[in-house]
Image (cartoon, rainbow, N blue to C red):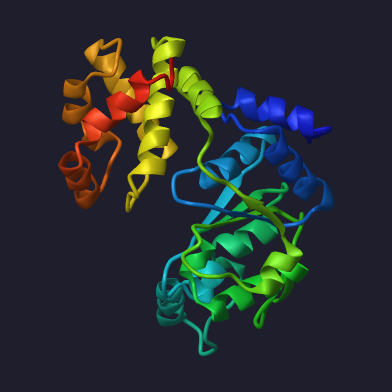
Length: 292
């Protein structure tokens, strides 16, 4: 367990996850208060990665429930192995049918697995905004009491209350009840200074000035071009790696035009970038002093 938020910040840095002191304080308090952490923000800012890093920092298992439209309780909590049950019934040699509602036939899904984990796990409930309000209400009830009733087996209580991280891309408004009872954290794209540090940490063989110019360039794309899909941090890193792979030591018009597909992942965004002279605008912005 981490002792304080500065210790957490240090451990996250060791895991390759660079973040701010403010974010480390929020995450640390969620751990300290044993409350779910609700992380909201645009795609690609490191919400899911935060849960993975927490599992590494705490040296524990990461259990992930990937949310999607139509997800139901059975897929999230538990199911019975109907195929195995049927075989047991058919192969029973006595007049009395085999009892097929026991541990042997139970299929754990992420929520039940987290409740029964022998060591306090990190439970990642990813993209909760994709499920409907009814499932959200069910999920919140489970997370409030950290127990579930299985009619055939009785009540299953958490062996260890898991560290819960819920992520949302903000595609719909989450319930006030969930927000009220969770520690809320909004993750946005990093500023230029932090993204430069991320590039330097993740991309080998790139010098600081070039990393800074890449960070300024991506910041410009996100802020000035009204993109349908602003580039994620992973796409910034991909773009930086293309420079290293091509042994380029600066951003040129030719390089930008030839590799823009590494940083923009939407056809309309790329077409708009080219139609509006995006490469020239970007270079003008950089040459006027940004990133120098």
